[in-house]
Structures are given as structure tokens and as C-alpha cells.
Image (cartoon, rainbow, N blue to C red; front, side, top):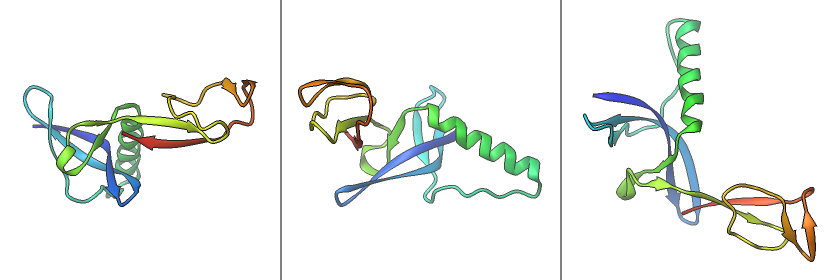
Length: 113
């Protein structure tokens, strides 16, 4: 059984909490389980801690997964422009905002679907 670190999203009321867990995969590479508690960093050596931290950093490049009943569905991150209210952005980007094209001083709120 293979495993790696992944970010899992938990819905708590109206808020979304992101935590890093060990996620386990079946023979086909499909996630089929994860640790009950988020992981912590600990080792008998600095080299071990460094290895763990590097593996945790790698998980930022992989899609976020929903925890609980939605596991292993991918949790999509979208962004809402706090100035004009548009909420169709896959990433913060320049756009026509409040009557003109804006690149700077935009404010963003992430949300998860």
C-alpha cells in the first residue's frame, strides 16, 4: 500500500479547515483512506524532520481532497474578488473590476466547492 501527505478539507459550519494527513492508495493509485488525526512533525534526527517537512511541502502541489463522506473527491478552490464581487476565478487574476481593468490592489477571498 502506498501513501503520501495530502491536504484534506473539513467543513465546520460555514468555515473550511485545511489539514495535512497521510493518505493511503489502493493498487490502482486511488485514495482509499487517511489517518484519523492530522500529522505532526517529529523524528529522532534533524534529517528525519527535514524529510518530513519536504514531503509536506510537496503536498501543496496536489489537489486538495475533501475529508469525511466526500473523500476522495477533489475540493476545488475558487476565488471571489472582494471589490466587484465576481466569484468565478480559478486563481487571483487581473480583470475588469468596478468600471475598469485592474491589476493592482485587488482583494480576494478563497472559497471551496
